[in-house]
Image (cartoon, rainbow, N blue to C red):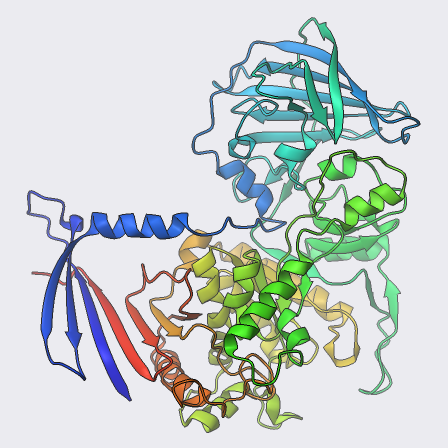
Length: 627
């Protein structure tokens, strides 16, 4: 093993100095191999911070997680303009096509007034009346004008209330922030009325609303636009999404043999009540099932033939028609061209994922039902990825930096029906290491391959339980994922051995909910950045994946394949496996991440960088070393 470079960053913290001790960084770089020189470089941390800012500025915009993005709309308003407009009220007419659908909005009343109890903020009230005479009302407490702002994405929404036709008003609250949980679907840009041109009048003359021209018909005497005092408050947990992947369950009668499938039946209203009580807060629903969950403090996707347009778009808990992007790496495993370089795998997985993004299935459904959406784009919210081969997490998040969820089929029993799924045992044998065979080490082997990329992209990660997971490993793996900052904990329903029974899902959901209640988590960003060691792979490489121990989960990229330097993938990866074994033995928190453009070594005490030519560099940061 050739160690080409060892770097040691020593950060001094001396209190009895006239200058800011954090302003200087003393770096010692020791080179071994081709030369034995020792160089000392003293570098300003301001320069380093400027370089980091430059790097971050080149990053692509982060797509928003379709659940947690709602909270982001509240918190990004670092430079929001003060509101404080004078009270006003106006009625608008929507210019609709001939013979519009009965559910389309024909007129809109906009009212605005300063919030007496919130200096610098305004109450905004929208009352929309449809062609069929039904009406709904929205109240927004904002710190800037949401209708004319040139940066609507920076507006802070402190409160959000929706009153649907024939129902009492509901306030939507994000439990994490205590503030409003606004809708998705490009709420600020797409779902609110927007003034045309550069108008700065809150009660603008002309604008657009839900894809159609909006014309001011009459200016009215201002009235009280505050929401009623009697409002139902729904509080949503957006930082821990416990979900089930289907809208049906097994019938509870088991199956005749392992070769047989279960018999499945649709969820009933009572089932939804049971699941919500157990702590499940994300559902897929169809038809009448929508009505059983849409006004509860849970998230849902799916549709009903009797679409509540446009009210459904204004429900912050409506997430579109899909829950996830399904297994990109698994689906491509047999598609890579034989002999193709690793860069081809990266390219193909990027293309595959991007084809699944910017989905307009819900918009198409509305159009098919005769609703003319005009210029309304209505792209569905971004989706996390559900994947088995999570060694590809970094490359998948490059294309879709929303989040990734592991399909967990935990096996550790040496008497398992297939040795292919005994991950740690096979790694020990293949790479001649001695990782202790414990449940925690098994979980960390996989979780570290998601946490590193999630830290690089500031993304979400999580896990899901499958029927193949040994029962005694299920709850401990969920608890550890929660402790490490996982924001998704899901269950798979359907398909023989993959299926987790309904009763088991209820039991596990109840237990992890109770555990979370008893163990509040610190800031999630702090958990995301908790690892002290980064094991950095050459870009394009992955750790061996389950089943065959290939990289990328495919025979196209086996461990025996040689790279351009004449080294096998196994030879390149061996130092990384050895470092993982060291971390697991010594209980060191570590991440595994490729050396892509988004990897940032800041915050790691130790960075072990593996290079494709077999060289290794180790950079160590020592904080407060003393005098």
